[in-house]
Amino acid sequence: MNTPVRPLLRPSRLAPGARVAVVAPSGPVSEERLQAGLDILRGWDLDPVVAPHVLDRHGQFAYLAGSDADRAADLETAWCDPSVAAVLCARGGYGAQRMVGLLDWEAMRAAGPKVFVGFSDVTVMHEAFATRLGLATLYGPMAAGIDFIKNARAQEHLRATLFEPESVRTITSTGSALVPGRARGVTFGGCLCLLAAEAGTPHARTSARGGLLCLEDVGEETYRLDRCLTQLLRAGLFDGVRGVLLGSWQECEPYERVRALLSDRLGGLGVPVVEEFGFGHGEGALTIPLGVGAELDADAGTLTLDEPALA
Image 1 (cartoon, rainbow, N blue to C red):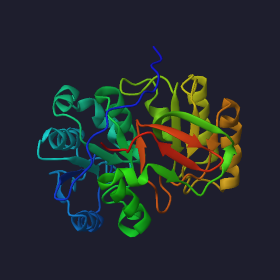
Image 2: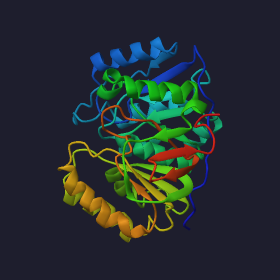
Image 3: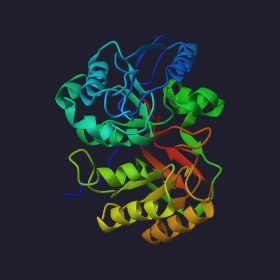
């Protein structure tokens, strides 16, 4: 059954003094970057706590932050801790797919809603939180990410989203319309290659109907982006989409080639498409709420949320 994309439950905004947990569901984390990120969070008057296995390294696969079971336990324990108001991912990389099936979703649902932040490989978790918990999440900078610790714009937009979400109800890009027009829908999406990899799994949605699709990626050759887009198109997962927001394509091939591909694969959807919207792996990345009703104005390069990202 192709369930349409609908607005999801919004967790509460953060207040000064809130306890936030930092977890590593995917790749290994630099201790130096982690400490720098924690300092920023403390500067926001938050109380960050680091999950026990965040700095672990998998004994056999160096691209993983510890074992699948330990990474899953860290996330589940943090989520089910009533003293924790938000769970922030330390970084992406790879690994969320390996642990998402180990989580006790019934226990996490019983723990109630809270803020969840991350991007890139964490796309897997955003999809799972939407389909299993019906919860809106934030596609934004991660606590040990180089852009977060080095870029004031990325920091400030995330801070405002967490504490003063009504101040960023309209998100403005510097991009332009690849396909002009306006559209209303519900935001969803993330990293293109992860959305393609998740297609058909128990935690992935089956339809983009009624949605405003957010797409970005990093370090992929154009033919690989083509393969992911074509797979999703052939699977019918873009059928009924209302509009498309395109973020960064950092470390991909020259943008002229990527742009030509995006126009070729997405231009025929018959919906507004805005490029270079400023979220994802690019410098100074914006925080995009997922699961929130909004209006996309491709000509103006704006996304206006029906309600603040957090309640």
